[in-house]
Image 1: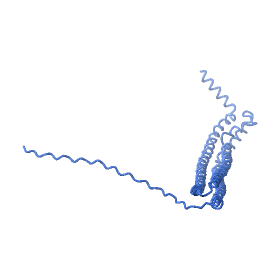
Image 2: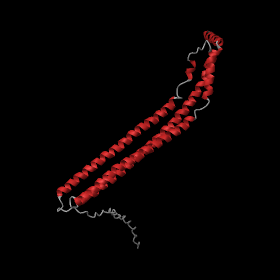
Image 3: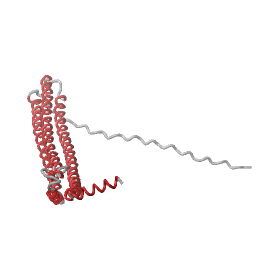
Image 4: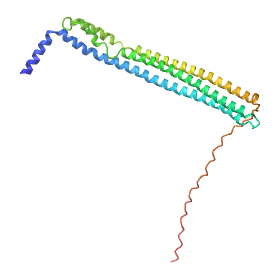
Length: 268
């Protein structure tokens, strides 16, 4: 009996303020639209993050490959000069050759400084570029996620003028029905911009490494000239050793299968 009385009183209370109740009903209509918008924006931004991660991964791989190429070239140049120095007979001024070895080592160390500057500059630019990109993604996501629904109650009174709140909520519903599909195109533009920026960093890195390698090459060529003109050495023909192909191991013969014994004839 008490439960029935409570329900009756509640029904009477709701009936006295139908527009206030309509505000709650309208909120129940609106809030699922926010979920749909949020899911769309979050998924779109997540796709952008995954794509950017792949782009950055490719960039790292390209930079490592470029550095490997330049390092290998520099080591080969050093080896060529050091081989020439080591191939000189004892009649050549050994102190002069020692100075050349020291000069070669010094030039390699200077090239190493140059190469490190190149890759750290590329790394610094990469960090600032990626930070700007993700700040853009965060801004796009925050613009649509978790905000707006309760803003319609600011400076309003659900009992004094609930119709104003209902009108605001209806207007909010109308705006939410228009999906922010522009976020998808903006995301494509942002990823394309990141890709272009990474390509610019890669090209600048190549230019920087090329300049350092050219200076090292000039120093090594000067070392060759000094070997002849200062140390009175002579360049020798270096025969590159061809890699010896591996000798195949002899095949292990399979054990012979014993022939079955022929039974002796039974004379009995």
